[in-house]
Length: 248
Ligand SMILES: [Zn+2]
Ligand SMILES: [Zn+2]
Image 1 (cartoon, protein in one colour):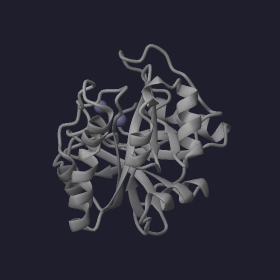
Image 2: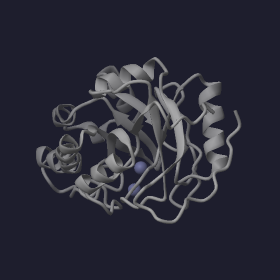
Image 3: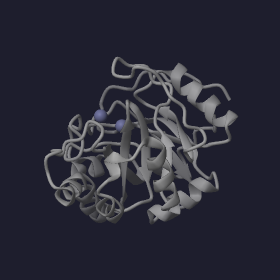
């Protein structure tokens, strides 16, 4: 795994949730933005659970209203981020039978324009978002949990693989890293945080500031991101468990 380098790089979160967008989120977008600014991040990508996942937004709403509500966590985080000097980008975590895809690089307009999005099969989804300029990383591909019946791999249909997720066991993260390497896929790392006191943080480090999500996507395509893991969360008093060393 790429060496952790928490100094001299700009930190970006690639996987996090808000209480406005995710049913399992416990802190608001504004609270999360504040926490990440305190933790020294330059930017965050809000990846709330999409409509086909553990989303906080009612499925009974008309599409436009549904999309507007889905983006509120991001918008609240972005407003706080403007005050804090923290870049905040819109993303979402698309769910297909518990196989999940972190999607970014597309705006609210993309969602508004595709009212039939939930009727697409997963391959159509991946092909369409990527053709539109979206960037997709398969989240925690080797995670094992009660809610995951079995794993699925989409190496021909994604841009990247999440090789480090703080909520996963080291063995599953190690498998993800080997899998990304073997298939020459870009690597993302994220906290998958659901509240401000998330015990340990992760993300990607870049040699310069990425002011727009397009900059993030371009930098990812150039493989400029460095995996950052076991970053301390200043809002948590207790030290995080001792990190295990991933193979390199
Ligand atoms: Zn969740
Ligand atoms: Zn997540």
